[in-house]
Amino acid sequence: MIKKNEQGSVSIVLAIGFGLLFVVTSAFGIWAYTERQSYKNDVDAKIDDAVAVAVQAESTRKDAEFVEKEKSPVRSYTGPEVYGNLTFDYPKTWSVYVDENSSGTVLDFYAYPKILPEFNSGLPYALRVKIVAGDYDDQVAAINTRVDKGLMTSSAFRPEKNDSVLGIKGDGNLGEDREGSVVLLPLRDRTISFVTESQEFVNDFNKYVLPSINYQP
Image (cartoon, rainbow, N blue to C red; front, side, top):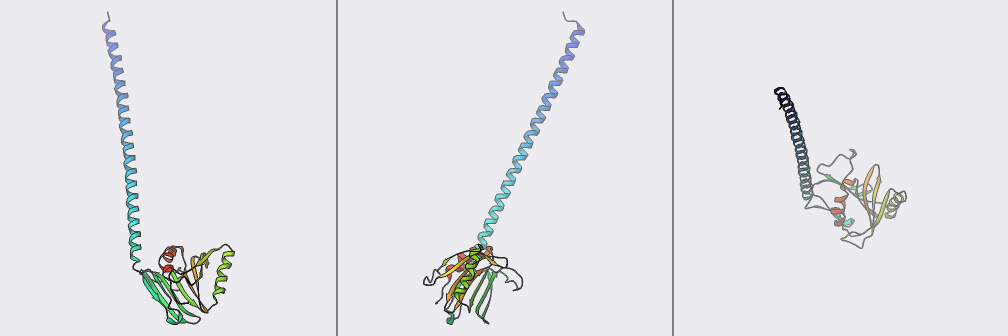
């Protein structure tokens, strides 16, 4: 037979055991709940971040599409008949300044998106077109010199609208901290040059300007 004092001791032991079990179980439950909430919060935060990135990417894509659509329809320039009726297109969002018949230059065309910067601003122009009194071969030699120095690459260029004309296209360092592209074309005793002075405008240069060039050599 178990005496009363022994029964009391057993009861105390059991009570302590159940109490400890309850404490451990409660602690585990709290820990599990906390971990689940932390995991849920982490997942929710990652989902929120992913959604924000996707929304930003879509907004950027739409902005880029809008800017591209705004460039069309293009505008066109046509030069004097005496110099071959040179024509070419450029995005309608570009502002333009044209100087004709200056000393040594029968055309000096400047273009830049929206507001045309001052000439001494130092900003690279999206497009410069010149008809200069200068030997074509001498102008090409200047490009070849930069190619030999590893500053530029070059290739033959024929206007799509007049493939009877053969010129040269150079890409790379134009000098004076300018990186872009230049196309030289012969025009009798003169030279036509098309230049974009920044990589920022090279895509427009290749997409809108170069395919539209036409003139009577």
